[in-house]
Each structure stands twice: as structure tokens, then as C-alpha cells.
Image (tube, rainbow, N blue to C red; front, side, top):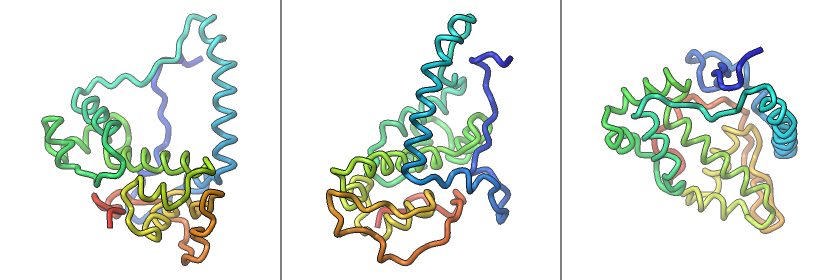
Length: 198
């Protein structure tokens, strides 16, 4: 049995050969209802497993990051206002290394880049807010720095595989009239460093 504190390799959907289809695409294209069900099931599982691990002398611990540049840059990204544009140069500068070195260290240690981590943080924020009916799509888009609703809808759809849902707070701004985009897995190089802030 694997010790609970040991690191396990989890396939990252962003790591694929350029131009190759992503085999995990369908697994990550969950609806909002499915996402909520998965979260609920995970918390239920943890509630059952944690006491059993404790009885066996094991504990669940957060990922330990040994590289100080990764740890400091992650802390900065976690504090970065979601409405501000991504600034790769600033994050790397404050971490004391070049942007390319920082990206390489993140890939080696965590299997993703700082930009991907930040983009996923924004996506989680959008999903959580849109699940609360008092927040409209327009409000969430504004909170993330989007000045054009269509750009937010396209950004969301390209990552989530579905359009952001119309909410009870403002049903008049449902994006159902926007042209549908085929679900695609976002290649980090194609995302751009300041996408969505137009």
C-alpha cells in the first residue's frame, strides 16, 4: 500500500505533444452538476479515509515544495488579483530567476507552468461563482478582468467545454446566442500571457 504522504503522478491535461489530441479531454469536460457531484463525493471519501489512515499511523499532507522559487512564485500567484493581467516577467523577477527558468522548474516539479496554475485558479473562481445564482455571468467576467462578455464566454468554453450557464441573477445575458466553439484543450503557448483582458 502506498504511503499517504508519498507523491503520486497524476496526468496533467496541459502536458501533451504539440498538435496531438489530448487523451484526457473528455475526462475533464464535466458539466457543473457533475463537477459538484465529484466534489461532494471527494469530500465524503476523505471524511471516511482520513480516520482510517490516522489509525494506521499515516496522514494526508499537502504537497511539499522544496524549490524556494516555486514556493514563492506559487504564493504570489495565490495572492494575485484575478482581475489583473498575467505578468510572467514580474512573477519570475520576484522569484529571483528568469521566466524560462521558472517555467522549467514548475514543469519539472509540478508538471505545469505558473501560467497554467494561474489560469486554472481563475477557472475555479468562475465555476464557483457561477454555481451561486446570485452572481451573473457579467459580474463574474468583470471580476476576472474581462470587459467583453463574448471574450469571457469563449475563454470559459475553451477550458470547460461548455458555455458559462445563465444564472437566476441575470438571465438576460445568457451566452446562448454566441457562436458555439468546438471543445478544445488549451495549449499554454496559444493562450498568450494576457488573454482575456480586452
